[in-house]
Image 1 (tube, rainbow, N blue to C red):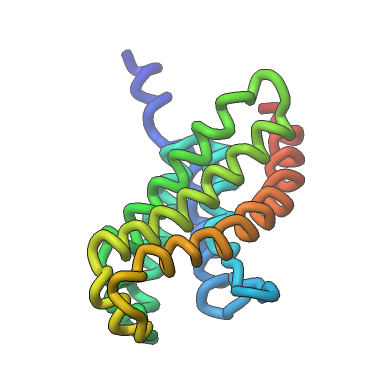
Image 2: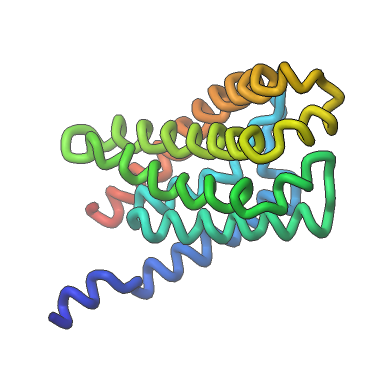
Length: 195
């Protein structure tokens, strides 16, 4: 009974990973280093520590890092407001999708983890990244379509087209960047840990 209980609780390594990767996310967000300028948009890499934590230590660790990322996003939007801060101070927009990143990245990874580590890590990174992009934008659309249209100065009838256009133009490059960054890091860590 005690053995099962210890397996479900977080160990020292998992807590250290949560702290370290959450701190990296906050540094990326507060310094602006978490954004990579691309020709058509800015790709974010702030969700990458969530994905790495999830693939290395499992969905609970990933979801916890995602929770801290989401709470930091609320804090940032309250202390340094932007055009869309009205949406990002809502936990359904800024926290829920980020928690889901940690869960979906792990299960995307675990689909092929016994066959090919590199492929499975890349798949987990892509799934986690797309969860972030589509999750955040879908929640903005569902909860704030009219306010979004007003803030952006667009016709309310085109809100879905604009939001999901952004999801494609940002989401695909972000997923590619996530795969390129996460794969070598997570594969190397897994080899060191013999996982």
